[in-house]
Amino acid sequence: MSTVIALDAMGGDHAPACVVDGAVMAAREYGHRLVLVGRAERLAHELRRHGLPPGGSGLISVHDARDVIEMHEPAVAAIRQKKHSSIRVACHLVREGAAQGMVSAGNTGAVMVTAKVVMGTLHGIERPAVMALLPNLKGLSVWLDVGANIDPRPEHLIQFALMGCIYSREILGVDNPRVGILSVGEEDSKGNAVTKEVLRQLRSSSALNVIGNVEGRDIFNGNADVIVSDGFTGNVSLKAIESVAEMLAVLLRQELTSSLPARLGALLSRAALRRFKKRVDYAEYGGMPLLGVKGSAIICHGRSSSKAVKNAVRVAAEVIESRVNDRIQEVMHSMPGLAAATEGA
Image 1: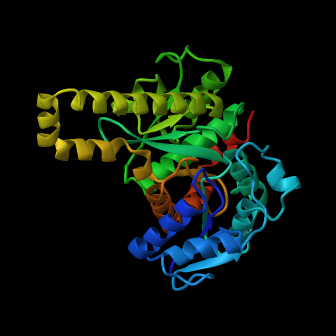
Image 2 (image 1 turned 90 degrees about the vertical axis):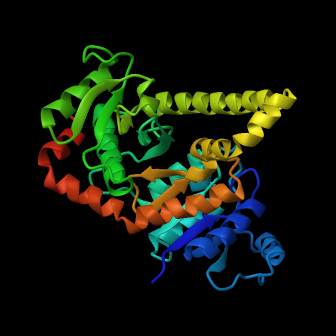
């Protein structure tokens, strides 16, 4: 039986057009069953652009949801006020077993809160974490949390380390992921009270391959496979990185078109430039998994293109098919020392 994924068709700056476009692309390329969740009349219009009937056909279907959580609205609106929002309905489809995962480019806070409340968290995981996947000089780095938990306790960061390791191993194929705690220095004495306690507990448990503290440069040099931080530090840092990447792309484009020799050089290097763009383009990575919830929940950038939506569907299916959640539960039960650490002092 094919994997079923619910898409919040009303979420994102370019919804529902880009979401429907991405869904059609994903259905054709991956063969997963997709449920478009949103206002049926608007989705019917978008489906007709692709020559599909109003209710969808084949691998694509429509589930009506009348409410929309806007980007500026508080996350609690998803739970208290708009109980028929596309985000909440998509999460309910996962909870009821009608879908195995959900994807949204909508209000990030609303997705996180709704997924936690409606879908529930895995046993032993108190706080879900948003995970970012970043290219480095040696491959890919798993980084969490990048936005879900602003002020977590030490046991929460230990849970993040565990989930990041399992994702790195099961999805990326890293045999023994190296875990680093993002801090202001490599020495164990550096950092705040939370990072120091996290490092102490992780070293004492020996359940994970902890290399110690890592600094900002280690996000991209490949020295760590899993980078752990609180959501405040992670989110601010990630957005700064995105801004720098966008600036460099603009500067590179300006330089490559500044003169005839530069344009000729760009023409000769276009294959390499195309590969470079693919490695750093967020749309290629699709979205960020919200690890720790029951089912697969993928949070996309609000500006997601149809290609990003398509790739987010791929990521959701990878999380489902690799049984990451099952592995998290197995590890929690097989490593009592680590499980005890996650319960706090």
